[in-house]
Every structure is written in structure tokens, then in C-alpha cells.
Length: 157
Image 1 (tube, rainbow, N blue to C red):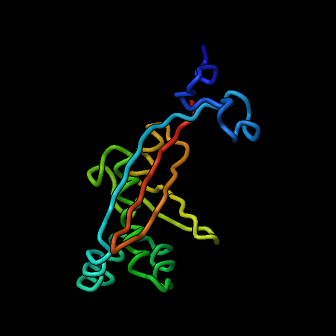
Image 2: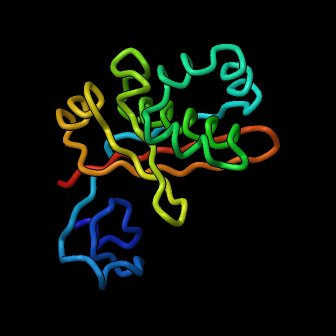
């Protein structure tokens, strides 16, 4: 029995009667969950690091595109902290943390609506390819002086 035929649709196999997206996707598309990661960081911690280390910290952690994006934001420290948390969450989803890849290997961009996306580079890209990752999804939120991010890595089965 295919899991899409099971009552609970416990595996992500589409089409599934309980999933609204099934009319938009080809039949029998299987998405495998290959990794998840989450991170939370105090915005003040990132502010202190930026104040203390300045451009050195920025260049070590953020890509030029990220620096340009956060540098023009009105709530800049929230932006820097959100990107930091997203990078940590992505590295955790890869299963290696910072031991396998660096912050610069994970770029968190935003589209014109502010929706974040991830571009993997260098060692992070190689590790993701070796694991069969075809897509990385990320969500970032800010509240009460903290930034939190959640990352999901998918592959096709």
C-alpha cells in the first residue's frame, strides 16, 4: 500500500486526499525530509558582536548580499540576528553544525516580499548534494528581543 492510500498520510507522498496541494503537483511526487534544524539567538548578542568586531564580524558571518540587505534595513539588528539564526538552523539541518561548513557557506536571501530563501555554497553545498538535498526551506521570526529560525531540507525520492 502506498502511504498516500493510508488513512493518515503519514509519509509525504502526494497526492494525498487530505492535502490541498495535490491538484497542483504531478502524481506520485515524493518529498523526503532529510534534515531539520532550529536556532534562537538574542538580538542583543548579535548587536554586541557587531559593535565590538564591526566589519570583521560581518565579513566572517555574512555574505556581501546579506550585508547589503541588512545594512539598509530599519530594524537592522533584527535582520542580522535573523540571518544568524537561519544559518545556524541550516547547518544543524545538514547534521554537522559549524564543524562541517562555515557561516559564509550558507547565504540567506530575501525576495521582494521579504520571504527568505537559502543558497548553499562551498562545503555546505557539497554536503547537501552528497545527502541528496534538492531544496532548503527556512522561516525566520523576531519577537521580544530574540530571533528564531527553522530550516527544513528536502530531497526527492
